[in-house]
Structure formats: C-alpha cells, structure tokens
Length: 371
Image (tube, rainbow, N blue to C red; front, side, top):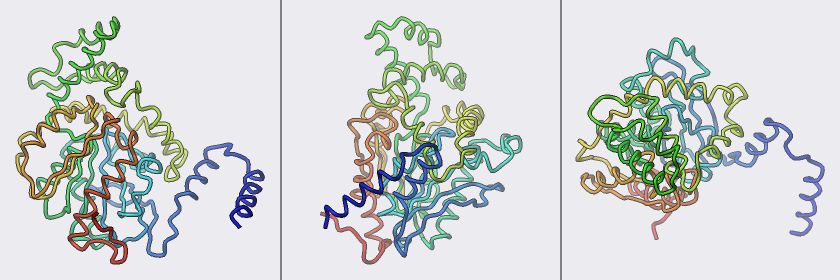
C-alpha cells in the first residue's frame, strides 16, 4: 500500500511544475503548514494598538495551549515573514503570536509613514508592547502568557517582565540586550581582534577610524554603528561562520502572511525604524535590573558579538528570579532562532512549556510530561 501511495504522489509531482513565481512558492509553504486541527487557529489580522492598526499573526493547533508572544528585533527586523521556517513546529505546543511593531513590516504598510514616524520613540514602543500583551490575554482568555523577546525585542520584553510580572508565566530573552554601550564596546574590540588576526587592512583602517568607540554617555553616531556592524558581521559576529544574515532575510520573500507589497516594503520600513530608534536603543542599560518576579529563561548564541552574549551571561549570573535557566547555543551567534531552529523548539518545550503545565494552562489532553 505504501508503494501505491508513493506512485500516486510521484505522478502528481510530475504533473505539477515546480514553483515559477512567489505566489506559487508561498502557496506550497502555506499548504505545508496549514492548521487543520478542529481546535486550532490560523489567522493574520489587524488590531488597534497605540492608536494605529498593527498586524499580528496567530497560529495554534489548540487554542487552549499557552500563548507565546514574540517581540521581534531590529528595530524593524520583523520575525513574522520568516516564522514559516524559524518557528516551525511551535504551534504544536503554544498559541504563537507574531507581531509587526510600529514602523515595521505589515504595520508599516498599513499606516501613513509620515504620520507614524514622529511616534517612533522608545517610550511609545514600550507602551505598544504592554498593549499587545493586554490584547493577547483578553483575546485568548489567559491570565498569563509567555513573552519572547529577541535583540531589540528583548529590551521591550525584559522591561515588561520587570514592570508587569503578573501578566507573564515567564520571560524568554533571545540574544538578550542588557548594557548596550558595553555590548558595543565588546563588539568593536572583537571585530578589531579578528581584523588584526586576518591582517585585513581595510577592516583595521575602518575600525580604527571610529575609535574610541562607544565611550562616555553620548549616543553613538549611526554611521559609526553601521561601520562597526559591517566588520562585525563580516567576521561572523552576528551569524556564526557567515558574513551576514542574508540567508534569513531572503526567507521573508516566501512568507505566506506577506503580500508582494509587504515584501517590497520590508527594508524601507526597517530603514525608518533604525533611523528613528537605533541610537536611542543603544543607550539603554538594563543592568540595573537585579530582581524579577517572574521566571527567566535566556537563549544565548555562544558566538554572539552583535548583542554581546557575555554581557547578558554576566547579568544573568547575578539577577534573582523565582527560577532561571540559561541555554547556550553552541553553533550560533545572534540569529540563533534561524541558526539552530531545532534546538530552539526543543528548548521551548523542555524549559518553557512546563511552567504553563504546572499552572494548568495547557490543553487538557495534550500536556507533555517532563522526563
């Protein structure tokens, strides 16, 4: 019988040409990940947050499972369009919400950039994040949810965890930002070390031109940040053993949640968000956070120099929390969710979901037992 099935599938495949355009490719991906469970949810929608329309996607095999809200990095580095790959399988264990922040992705397209641009402040982004959490709790009837913050999103997420522990089962920090200026200094020093070891004269010259880098309390000039990132990325400090994250960025073009216009505007939106927010973000120092009232889980790439993993690990060693867990990703830098997606899923199931299980916030027949 299996042989007959394979023959039938082969015949269908021969009749169906390989994808010839984006629409055909995204249809294949959408069909592969289609949620057919009767208690499931699969939707992409606008919600009113902070006075504007902001886009979220929601995916779950069982809406009774714990909610996991993802706060993407950047500013402007959207996670929704790459979640078809990066977050594959998460919806079997969580109700996963991907949110395109103000000035980013589909939310950028849904609003007049000229109207939104003046509101792109760190303070407004924190307010938006709080409002999204409140919306998620109400929409899914949850007293508590999980929040996962990556990079810039980890600043939003850790601040949320500090201010509103009563809203969270736990906070998960991925590529956690703590002391941004210290992270920048360590990133510059590492890039210079690599440049000298490689005898790369152009890199040495460029990095020397911005020295001393990230000193004092003056925000770093955006052009200097970009120059530091150019060589830090080149030597693999953002994505392990790769010169950049273009492989991940390219996956956005295959997003079933994104229209052609959405895809075409991704980088224009990111440029706006970076221009308005990045220099302010790089002055943030959360090392003052010494105690949390919610469980803490950190996922750190061993080779992350883009947002220094050592700075985050040093903070983690001293912070107090009801429980805490640090998971190292040995084959990753900053983009660990794309670099080691299998280990991310395993770690979410092993270290995060049991917190909701103990609180009784899982589908009654679907709870995983710790082994």
